[in-house]
Image (tube, rainbow, N blue to C red; front, top):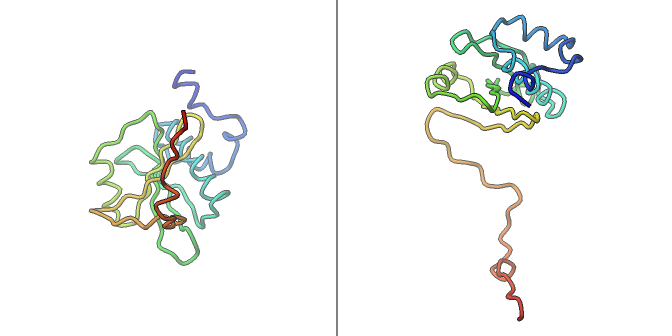
Length: 146
């Protein structure tokens, strides 16, 4: 399937009010608008984010999303990026300079979404949630008897 047909959203998406609002931001890249809509749906319907809205970014000719993970928290800026497009440092700097925490969301052709938290400088990652020290014995592999 070539890139042009992959970017065409199904008909129900084109009729969705939020998709139409994103299209009215006039960014000129329908694949990026479609990616922004998929991310919007994931944030609002699956992850239950609050106050998610589309924001035009004329410098990048892109739709950014702004929203809150929970009520009362700081708003995050989300940059939905179709996976076939590359991104330049200048583009990331443009978004980071807005001052809000930023997420980059790569949108694959099969609608898989991968979020990456970005920051200005180095950030120490949080420890994994379910990692426990299970002792050395459980990490050893058994040798097959021949």
